[in-house]
Structures are given as structure tokens and as C-alpha cells.
Length: 104
Image (tube, rainbow, N blue to C red):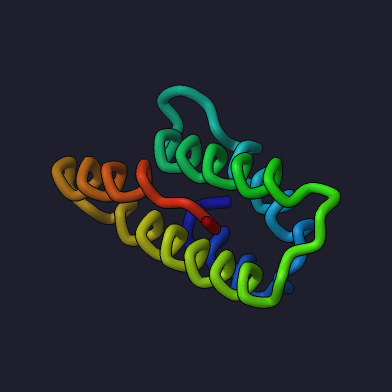
């Protein structure tokens, strides 16, 4: 599943923690050194791990859910756009993704 397919999949999901766990699994599934978008997927997995670890077994507010959804959509949109970029564009996208968080 490429990053555009991940984005479309995520748009159809709810805001529950299970969605983020499933997205993490999908990102990690096809990730291997040298694979297309491997670095982007690794950054997405790291961001998702942080969010999942923070909220696993804990309720989160509707504000956190909304923020997490918006931030994840931005990350996936940037990842999808980077897949068509030249080398400099890919590096710029990776730099942005490296510092993004799903929720505070």
C-alpha cells in the first residue's frame, strides 16, 4: 500500500486508537531498507508509536481526537506529495515529518 493509499484509507476511518494502531501496522508492513518511501514510513511509525504509547488504555478527549486526526492527515498528505518529489523535495518532506507529532 503506497502513501496515497494509506491517506485514502485513513480518511475513511474513525478517530479511535485502533485506527492509529492499524495505520501503524499498515505503514510498517511494506517497510524495508531501500523500499520506496521507507524513510517516510519509518517516521510515520515513530510518530504513531508515540501517540499509541501515550494513549493506550487511556481515554482521550474529543479535542485530542480532532487534533490527532488533523495532524495525521497533514503528515499523510505531505508523505503522499513527497513520493512524487525530486530528491531535494523528499529530503525537505522528511525534515518536516521528523518533527511532527500526532498530538501534544
